[in-house]
Image (cartoon, rainbow, N blue to C red; front, side, top):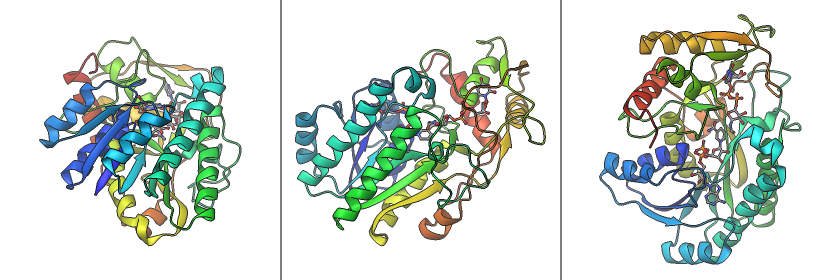
Amino acid sequence: MNVLVTGGAGYIGSHTCVELLNAGHRVLVIDNLCRSNPEALNRVRKITGKELLFRRIDLLDYDPLLAALREFSPDAVVHFAALKAVGESVRMPLTYYENNLAGTLNLCRAMSAVNCKNLVFSSSCTVYGNPARVPVTEASPTQNAECPYGRTKLFVEEILRDAAAADAAWHIALLRYFNPVGAHPSGLLGEDPRGTPNNLLPYIALVAAGKLPELSVFGNDYPTPDGTCIRDYLHVVDLAKGHLAALDGLPRFAGARAWNFGTGAGVSVLEVIAAFASVSGKKIPYKIAPRRAGDVVATYADPTRAREELNWSAELPLAQMCADAWRWQTQNPDGY
Ligand code: NAD
Ligand code: WQD
């Protein structure tokens, strides 16, 4: 198939391009590079040995976007392009709503114009807010997400449900990722946050590399076995492969349908620290710091629906996530 990947120069998108190309698909990446480096695309080409088409286009620029879709004639679209920093979204909500919502509306309008109505959307477990019960199923309440970023995901999901309800030609997968971590085993692709990372794994990797002095553990007084928050970390390669399963599944499902993409296993912050120290052989100095505003105590997926309906399950263990993240860090100490 011809698959358009928006945001394909980013962390998850670049890993997904590898799997799409290796599966024999023809891929066009559209990305404005506001949060990524085109070198990631060269690494995808190097890993796969395949042609990867790229257009530097902002989804907010409708005319060049439509022209690119007319030229490429996609059979399906995987839509990663978004701003995704929680704290930044609190400081710049209008920027987030414009980029993430208007960008998606432009994309859907251009898709309709070229009669392509097969869409895989990057949603997030953030739509569940602070879940009252875990594991989280797709039927769990999508309460008020904790931040403007999370609300952009919630609103886009509702927009896509309405689009599908009005036109049965749309087949839309709403993929609610939990916590993607790790890197491609080649060490050529990985998470390349600009500045000091907000997320746990890339921060730990910098501490292990001696580039940051210590990790602040945001609270150890939560009602969990070791007092630290629990998350569902999944390997980014497992997640990338899940997008192929979602593309294959699209024709089998009418309308817009949500799937949780997680391992189903809850892991604490201290457990991640121990796993990373074990695979890297490095000490991870840390201190207990105050809780971080907006953190949920525990969230992890019930991945049953994806297993039964898409024949997809996350397979790679936490140790592999940490080992691959560490290889990326050591082979790319300054990112791309
Ligand atoms: P990322 O920032 O690495 O990639 C996003 C890409 O989109 C970047 O390359 C950026 O340049 C591009 N982009 C942003 N706005 C654009 C626009 N207007 N036009 C064109 N390109 C644009 O992020 P990621 O971690 O790869 O996440 C990909 C998707 O998955 C996002 O939608 C994110 O919200 C979602 N998601 C990520 C996580 C996570 O923990 N990484 C978890 C759940 C959901
Ligand atoms: C994980 C745990 C922190 C850093 C975020 C977004 C979410 C999604 C995934 C886009 C938490 C603790 C972290 C640190 C710490 N992104 N931590 N010290 O918050 O679960 O999810 O990324 O969709 O929307 O919110 O991930 O990696 O930031 O935190 O103690 O320096 O690690 O408190 O318990 P989070 P995270």
